[in-house]
Amino acid sequence: MIKKFAISILVLWIGAVLLGRLVQLNPNLIDLNAILSAPNAHYYLGADDLGRSIAARLLRGVEVSLLVAISVTVVTMICGVFVGLLAGFYGGKVDQILMQITDIFLAFPGILLAIAFAAVLGPGINNLIIALCLTGWVSYARLTRGQTLSLRNRQHVQAAESLGATVPRLILRHILPLLASILVVEATYSLASVIIAEASLSFLGLGIQAPNASWGAMLRDAVRYMLVAPHYVLIVGLSLMSLILAINLGGDYLRDRLDVKTKL
Amino acid sequence: MIKRLTGLGIVIFGVLLLTFLLIHLVPGDPVEVMLGDSATAADRVQMRAELGLDQTLPQQFCRYLGKLAQADFGLSIHTKTPIITLIKTRFPATLKLAALALLIGIGIGIPLGIYAALNAEQWQDFVVTLVSVRLSAMPAFWLGPILMLLFAVWLGWLPVSGMDTPSAIVLPALTLGLGLSAILTRMTRTSLLEVLNDDFIRTARAKGLSESSVILGHALRAALLPIITIVGLQMGSLLAGTVITETIFSWDGIGRLLVESIEQRDYPVTQACVLVIALSYVLVNQATDLIYRWADPRVQLA
Image (cartoon, rainbow over all chains, first blue to last red; front, side, top):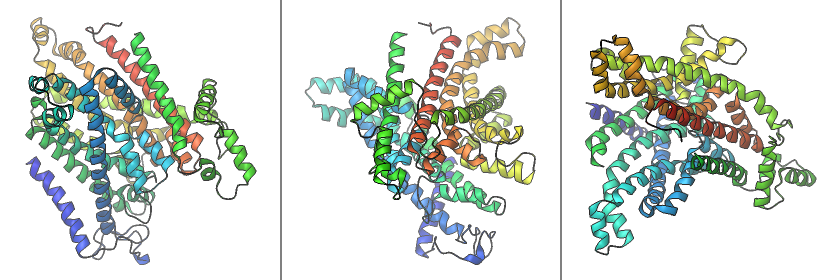
């Protein structure tokens, strides 16, 4: 049930994006007669403060969100897993130093550090991705390190080691495969949190810049015009929540399916 | 204890180093970016000297630390006022907001969690879980506007934004607090359910204690530990959440100061705000740790 619900929301969004591309919706087309109009036959979800179609901008926005989320998740996972494997595998001084560094990153609450990086790097989609990558690797590093520490002493790893397996082989063949499922689950949840972080930064004006569509920036405009066009803020907010919910439910499903808790 | 203090010292040093290095991440010349094209060469030299950017990095860092030790964050580039004054005027507002949000979170979250746990697997539990899962999926910049729309625009009970009337704090605090309460509800429910079947609960019941003293005196006490940890960790998102919530509701706290300073490219203020928020988070976490040790009879205060 949950799986179907999550998948159907995701499929709906992706299908809508593809359909929008197919009929060449223009998210930047300005219609001054339609400024802040409520949903009607021409603008199914109404128009924004510049008379652009909210539906078209939502679709472009979700495209950007997913693009940012996927690229940030991939980069942070690779970096974080690398750090975590090093720390967990070698232990001792290496572990101490690497974990001290992650502790420092963890000392900045939530997206504060991403805000700080985005602020000094300047706005724009590339800097947004850099800022989110600079701060996102920490959770993977922590997770991988903890798992690796215990896997390191498993019998099959020690057996391989005593048979003379090299360190890369030990890590790639004997440790990493056992980490795969827990990392997949973590990555799913982090997709959702990166989407929220991206929207937060864009909301603060630090992310994607006008005239490009992004959900965070749309929410910011929507809040500004809330008194005249309450449908705007509701539509963008509900869209965002549906996507986050679908991804998180997908994560729950994967967690149960891959049996992450009992396996490791 | 000494080991813990060293760890804390290293983290604080790292936070200082990272915030110090922030300004050097500005692409190109920060002075150029801050002053704009209209500045004269003399202005630039003067500002560079003011910010200490003409020295080597280690020298600059020492200077930065030395000034911080005297609570001197330098001057705001935009308003020319000492940054410490800005922080002193703005930080209390944030603390007030965060404290009320924490109260709301605990006040709603723990009772609801107890209620759900006592009615586990029944419709009450189902409803509470459903609502709390939905709530925790709502980021502040979506929950805030919804509350604003509902209570300020449609019902007209509370002011939309600003901080002129005492009731203005309610909506931003609710925005921050409801998310926290959702997480606390789920946490309380789970950890209470875990202990409810333990032997000591059966013993307490067998002794003939009233149900309320079994739940509140025995079960909740044991279930409290994970809840304390979660509250401590959530203080982080609460502090970070103030940045967005204060922006939505025009609440003049340190979060809004941060956003304003970013918009005005006032990097020293940005730097100071990030530092103050991060350091308060570090201290809150330390405090949580101490409370945890105090609450858990198994952990000895070393």
